[in-house]
Length: 287
Image (cartoon, rainbow, N blue to C red; front, top):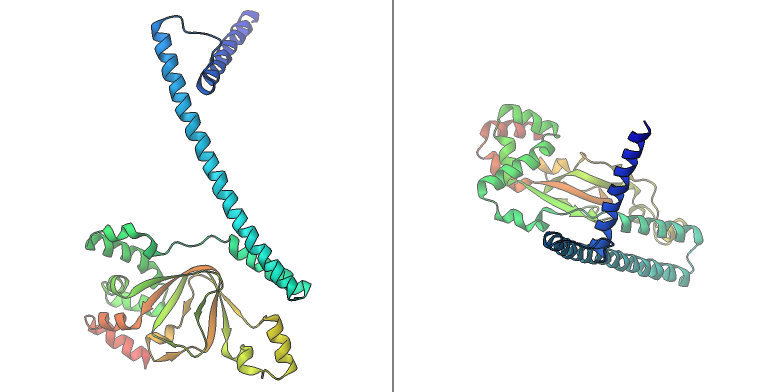
């Protein structure tokens, strides 16, 4: 038993000796065990060259990552410092100032979504592959609409045509508005990711309160409206625009970076010309 323990200890010692030689030869070029023949010399030289290339590549990569991170953090710090200076110079109340800074910081830290148009290599796809990709991307979203689900049972090709010819993608950053009150809309929207806040027209302060009223002054001073509805993914907006001339009765603002599928009315009408049976069903539904 003692001999087995000694043997195991001996093997561990030589294993650690080998690791030590590898580390010293790779990163410093020095070695406490010089080569004793030509083969060992060639191997040691190759190992040192490999270690030099690997070490320099690793160091440069880490340095570049740290530099990018530092530049990003400095940019954010300067923006937040400018915001704090602005709020302090204009004597904004501490509670409101803190709320503003918290929201700005949260939205700055949110990851931006990549729009389809930013993936330029997709333009290299053939028409067949491009249409197949559109069908794969758009069909599941379109089928979340109950009316389109019914139409899909009537015509197996309809959803594929809609997904190919009638759909666009819209990517919005935090704070951007999707639409304002009384805008004429010619498309329906489906939130695929992110979150929007919808404010009905009757709760818009500018629509209800005169600027001369004290309540109006207080409301505009805070800029806060509590009568908003949070819209989550898979929610359809302005669906009535598919069936009639539609003007918005509220406004929608992006809370977190969001991606939306847009179903164009003009393209949908063109597709219906080659699907007359479904067109009659949709006509009856819109009436």
